[in-house]
Length: 94
Image 1 (cartoon, rainbow, N blue to C red):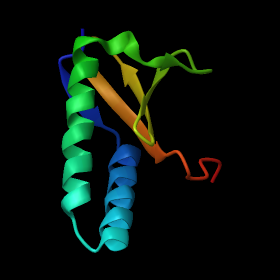
Image 2 (image 1 turned 45 degrees about the vertical axis):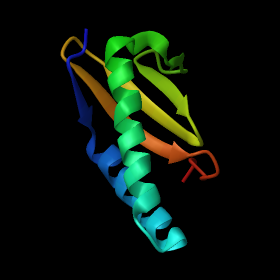
Image 3 (image 1 turned 90 degrees about the horizontal axis):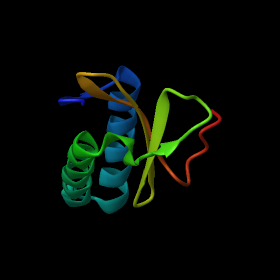
């Protein structure tokens, strides 16, 4: 069972992009703080129930659909690795 959460470099960039967009749109970082806190809460739940995500075409990648976000992640014995995070309205083919 995974014991810790790791963000890939891509996921870190995704988080920065999402937070920057929300901060600019809302002219405040209040929503971003709540967003990040809730994301971590959801990821901690995945540590307890790692296979509660949805299977994808790639057997090693699972998908968590949370609020308006897609969170793609991988599992190994020690880690839950967040691969990427997208808002549902984003064009992920870019």
